[in-house]
Amino acid sequence: MNKAMGLLGLALAFSLHSPALAHGVQPQQSTPAEPVSPGPLMTADQMYKAFGWDFDKTEIKTEKLAEGFYVLFGLGGNIAVSVGGDGTLIVDDQFPQLMPKIKAALKGVGSDKVDFVINTHWHFDHADGNLTLGKEGSWIVSQSNSRDKMLGDQIVNFGPFATEQKAFPQHALSDITFDTTMQFHINDQKIELLHIGPAHTAGDTAVIFRGVNAVHMGDVFNNSGYPFIDADNGGDLAGMIAFCQAVHDAIDDDTKIIPGHGPVTDRTKLARYIEVLTIIQGRVQALIDDDKSLLEIMAVKPTAEFDTEFQANEMMLPSFLSRVYASLTRE
Picture 1 (spheres, rainbow, N blue to C red):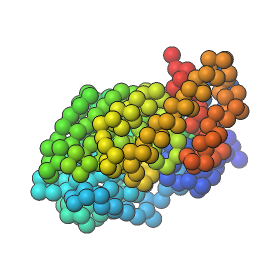
Picture 2 (picture 1 turned 90 degrees about the vertical axis):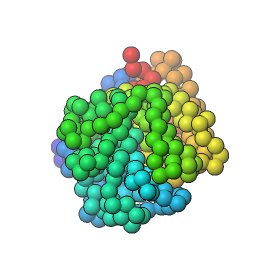
Picture 3 (picture 1 turned 90 degrees about the horizontal axis):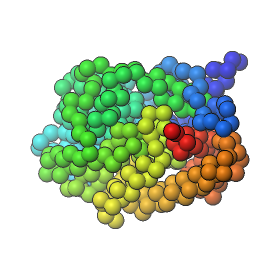
Picture 4 (picture 1 turned 180 degrees about the vertical axis):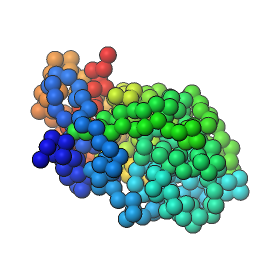
């Protein structure tokens, strides 16, 4: 077995254990004192296989949170849906391969056409549906840094392998961008778009639906394990904590929180997420200040008391710590 196939098998083993966690795999360990560099590049089809994704077998599940407001679960990022007399607005759009099933689910809640798509960020599992919806006339909205990333080919580093996300064609790019805040008024909703700063990536958006008291946070908040910090593309642990805190402060105890991955949850869970990430940041920073290498930090197990709570395993955990380390040591 060659090196690339061995890494693919490693990633596949992880995905079978926890297929929903597209952003948590064991990193390639290179120079111990340096952040982990990208492993071999995978094609999209190899990556789908590594994550255990089968578009043909995937079902789109619908959860109703309020009248005219839903969440769709499939592969990749969760999709929020506002449907009503003004049309349909969705947050994130997964994959073009799933679009027939997504459209069927939308039709089931009363939608015939997607008028607006808000991308929480530019990663393929949240924004590749733009390839279909943009061509059909949907208006695409994102934070300006995300559109900048869409304009060129990007490398997304998962640890044992990386994948190249190709530049989006013109019809799939954001038509409308914002820098820090923006508002929609649609379907009797006041919808607030917030960008706090670098977090999961450099271009994340939180989408607050004031009428139904819900927020979609994209991958800044992962409710299926430790988060993926795309440190190679501007992601930042301290920024992720600050972003989550800002959203926490902008909502109330009754707000329904839609994470990028995992089930819908509440403000208490978000507060716990902030608390744990803050503790881990402090511990890892202290070890870095003590000149510990990445492998030495891993050996100390600074996350041990949280690993069961955050569904960590021996493959996800090194990836998370390597991205924390990369974020905290980046010049």
